[in-house]
Length: 379
Image 1: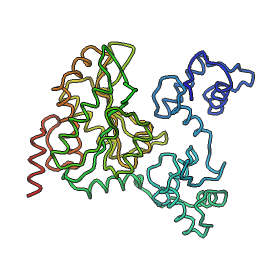
Image 2 (image 1 turned 135 degrees about the vertical axis):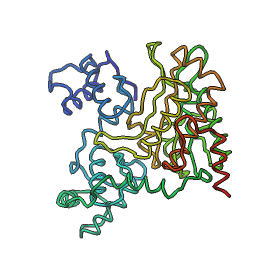
Image 3 (image 1 turned 45 degrees about the vertical axis):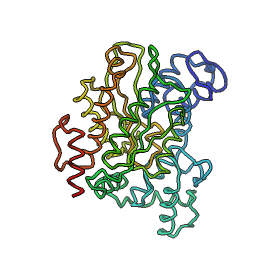
Image 4 (image 1 turned 45 degrees about the horizontal axis):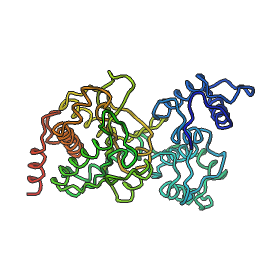
């Protein structure tokens, strides 16, 4: 679809206006002209902020999908697993969260009806004497609403995520990490003075890949140097190879040359669900990079971007500096700086798996320390 923005007119804008009005973000006005005016842009920005999307006031594919998803309520349509075109929506999210509350492992509550959601739904139907068809229709919705939650004291899916990391142990050897250098191919990303984001993060990804391989990890790149998969394709790659972690690397840009710093993002929904391990890893990466590089701390944030939402493993996206800022841009073009960033990310991953045992203060753990730790564990 084409990106919709201020000044556009037509049926697509009328649809966006109607959806925003239905969500209470615009006044209900059947006579409103189908124009993308400042009021619509403001409503879109508000919606994007609520949904953990990029707050740019534009209706691109991700925002349009989220607008459509927001119109669905549990029980309004039958839900089933469609392999070729999985259903998504707020009704699917509500189903997943309800199944999790009742003690059924529906996987990460991401609003996408996948195989794990279907398996949990079938188990629920079997346990409560319903027709076991994997379809969430009126009968199943009534059953879901009549029961009291089994799970208390924390989100079960997030507790399972923590337990998997605990069982994986502190050693890095054998762990499968998907490194996702942003953009690629014809999509150069941010481009300033002949320096392209895609090239910077590709080089950074290769440096990180080398360091991870030296520790015995399986480091897999989500793309080649001349490829640009979609966000969904990158997430599906991580799922297909059975990744333990997904690390997406980007640089940022802003119309203001003063904007600078590093920010880290992890999966989190409007209902408060978050990837606990993703949030932990994002925090470790953020603190390591701020201390090691001196970049301005732009903190960690919850988002629902596809690379975070669709991965089954904990996923983090790091925006490392602004190419549009003179100081950040100068540092990003320095290979030694990218080495420091790669070391910081590696150490953050190690610290996450240590779970607080034999750890060291932020910024003091080195690549050599990690190697020694791995060698000691092997003995």
